[in-house]
Image 1 (cartoon, rainbow, N blue to C red):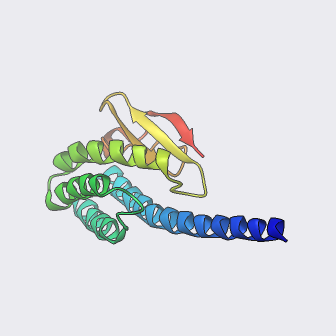
Image 2 (image 1 turned 45 degrees about the horizontal axis):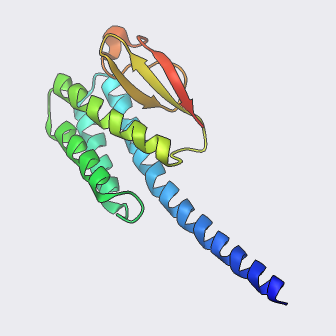
Image 3 (image 1 turned 180 degrees about the vertical axis):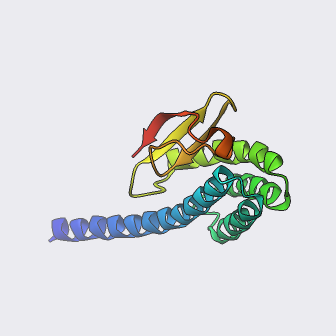
Length: 157
């Protein structure tokens, strides 16, 4: 009887742990989707859409529970997204996106941000990396002028 009770308790803790993990992953997944919107807008050379996508990123980051992702990490992400949102110059947005990308890459390595593979891509001309949901290179640092510049550094599964 004790064996069954202990098994039931472990099962309950596992379910609670999986539920908490799922909530955390769902919150970080939404943040990742907002990040991809910023990347796509930069690749399209659209500073207005980049600002709007960064604003959505900030809103999502503000809803994430500090118990799920550390407050310090969220503050850094919000700070970078705010700078992108407030900048109206695409060059400035791209410079700040480099910092945002470095922090999102660290987050993607720590949390499950997508059910699909996440690609860490790198542009040697900008000396910067970014995350992508596809292996095809769509460079946010140079947009249409050098859209395919870069390569896949790693894949996060």
